[in-house]
Image 1 (cartoon, helix red, strand yellow):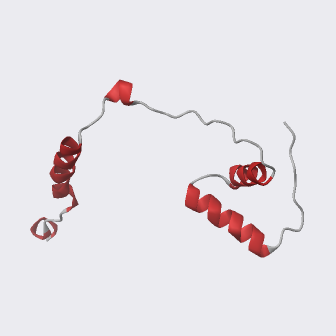
Image 2: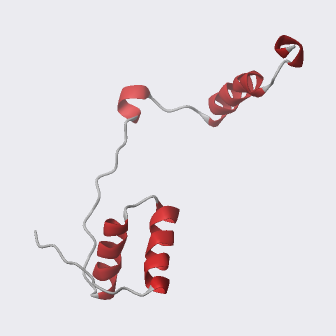
Amino acid sequence: MKSLTIHNMDADLAKAIEDLAESTGLSQNKVVKKLLRRALNLSEQEVPKRDVSAFFGIWTQEEAEEFNEALKAFGEIDEEMWQ
């Protein structure tokens, strides 16, 4: 694969790429490649989905709510224990 270096990038452009990378959770390199592909009307490569439900199963909405309710106790601080 070919590499490309962009010299003298203005601060606004660099900041926009940085912000987009941070907001999407992608590296700046991946953001720039996606932007270039979009600008040049090239199809984006299909990213395989990482579905692990076959190994772990899927909770119903009710099960997820029950689990989250059970976890609430771990977010509470017992002030008496810290004295």
